[in-house]
Length: 372
Image (cartoon, rainbow, N blue to C red; front, side, top):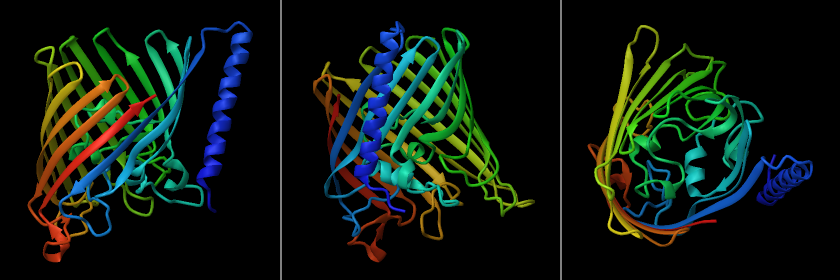
């Protein structure tokens, strides 16, 4: 069954018009507290990959996923509803980052896979149980990590290896509790490790805790617990944990440190395999319109639990990047980045290297992003 982009676009426009008409009817009936706002975002880029991969796809990344061509990284339109005790968001998306990230979406049965689900950035509905507790359900951003799916909201253009290899989105239900003014806790019941379609009959748990003792420091912890094996195999528990420290050293200088660690059962009575990673990012605002960011990172997945390399060896990689931002208008961001990843073994496509694989991956990226 083929679903065309035009058909999807007509359906999305129809849904947004229906929502808008419903809002106007609600306001006519005197319910003026419920509001819907519309918005959008476009991020176009050009990435020069020194390895010049033959099939143009860049490996082990979701952002700037195509080499040596002009393309759209991420574009979306959204409608956000807010009101007394209700909230929701519908966002429809497109871009090479979407194709790269949603490509592994599982196909189990006839009504699953990335064909339609990749267009859904978020589709949520929420209700406020008490003044401090919200329940939301649908497809929503994952509670893991310190890097956002939307490029404008990050300090760097490319995502670190730990971000690209932990979930960006989930499907399920979540509770968000404002425990104190300084602390927010989340609990998620979800299908699994970044999947809208299920892979087994098990459900997974996600959790996050953010604590801001003052306006300069934020401490975060998040975790995942779930079985990622299909029902035809014995359960293989996956546990993932992450800690984040973010601080404003000065009004212009920020620092963020992130560390990931996880394990997964190999098989009954066979022990567990582990993976880990880190990212350290500093950002300095040279003016109200310009900023620099620098990042150091590392990732290790020797048993290919998370990252499948296509080689007999797993991933052991480190890297660094420099980013320069110019924002001539509050809604416009011109971002430039240089990044180098270095692996212990040849992993990255390189048409001039032996076996067309290199242990180094240099790339230069420029992008223009507009928020509307």
